[in-house]
Length: 142
Image (cartoon, rainbow, N blue to C red):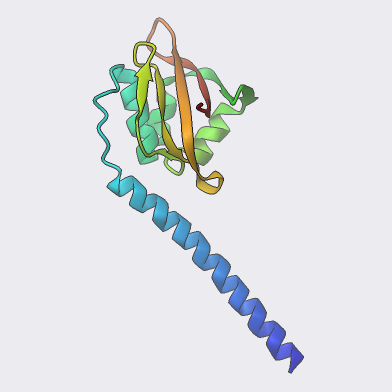
């Protein structure tokens, strides 16, 4: 009897975990689909292209707007830029664009960051004379 109970518990636990994963993926896709925000505040055309690529999960286009040796910081700490983009692009998304400053290169807004929840963040794009981004600073906004 105990063996049947343990097997039943293990099966139920594994099904619950699978269901949670599918629910989270489905929720992110629903947010992306319904997230038709006004991007007219994005006045820097390259930032707008990067933003649109980020939101849609197009990491290839997003990365193409950066130099090959681009760097990033996350709350002031250095982070692997390529790895972050590949892991988070399209999965962690802006829900709102609240402010755009610095000639359109700094964005603040509400952000859904997967397991970390939803909170205000900033993305600061650093652009070289050729129009490519060489650095991205991200972090929790005040």
